[in-house]
Amino acid sequence: MNNNLQNSKQQATVIKPRTGILLINLGTPDAPRTREVRAYLRSLLSCDRVLDINPVWRWLLLNLIVLPFRPKKSAKAYQEIWLEEGSPLLVYSQKLKNALALQFSEDNISVEIGMQCGKPTIKSAVDRLRKEECDRIIVLPMYPQYSSSTYGSAVEDLYKEVLHDWNMPQLKFIPPFYSDSRFIGAWARIGLPFLEKKPDHVLFSFHSLPIRHLEKSDLSGNWCKNNHDCCLELVNENRNCYSAQCFHTAKLIAERYNLSADEWSVSFQSRFGREEWIKPDTEMHLARLAENGVKKIVVFCPAFVSDCLETLEEIGIRAAAHFRKHGGEELKLIPSLNDHPEWVHTLTSIIRQQLAG
Image 1 (tube, rainbow, N blue to C red):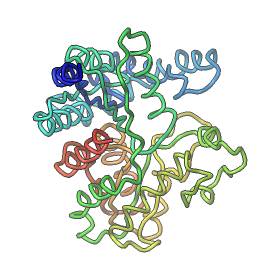
Image 2: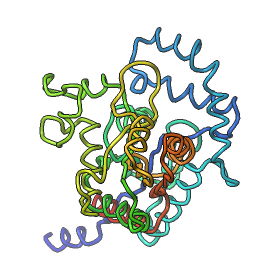
Image 3: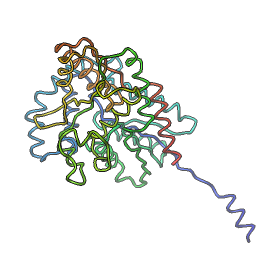
Image 4: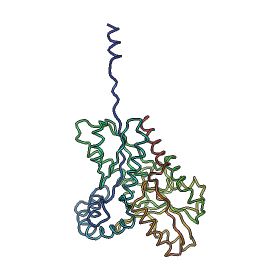
């Protein structure tokens, strides 16, 4: 009997769940035209994690103020940066996906990308992984720092897609990587040629958020002081604070170059509406730097892993012109991580770490 039991154990089939990798990013309009931009903005700003206000006020703001006017202006901005292959964010994201697929091809691991707004959708990406019979999905929201409006909404959007699956896949989320030494190292290496030219100043510009988002992230209820002082150092009390994570990312990159405190600074861009957002505002900060004698400046945008409207147009074109208008001579935007080999290597390492875990 023992021999029969042993034989049955030897004959037992070992089934390993198939693994897929899902990259999630915010998304982009399908075309640099008013109609497509309007559809994109409607999808983006309808999310209650992005516009966390009363639903009635959100509807009024969207349909009476934002959507009638902003799409035309934004469409013109997209036209400034649109590539022959399409939107930069989508083009670079697809190239990154393809590069990662090569890295994991021998492991029989599929890689897909899904956009929260626009195409390819998260649903289409999950459907493709389902067809590949992936029972386990490693999920990487492409947001280095945590905010409820980006990383949080990505998690929520994905769960909405799989919530009613009969065979629920095993989801494993890679946490925000704002302080990961591999992420910091990739930025430092990509930026090195720009720093070797000895700019007068190095600016780290991050996407801004309403102050209320920071206050809502303060679990203690008494740490957030609505000023820079409580964000300059990352500690246990502000570990969920987007602003503190941004300052920490900038500090770690600056340390790689041995920059002194007066050689670099942090600012926040992409404000929306009239309420109070994280300061200093990037354009105002650039004006002050230029008026104080800074002639040549380089700008990192470490909240974005792919070049997009906010980097290429807002910083590379608009902010550069604003800097020159106030007396500066040259603003150089450091390209984002995109599909740079350093970034492909970094993500491969981060994902393999999760697979091993």
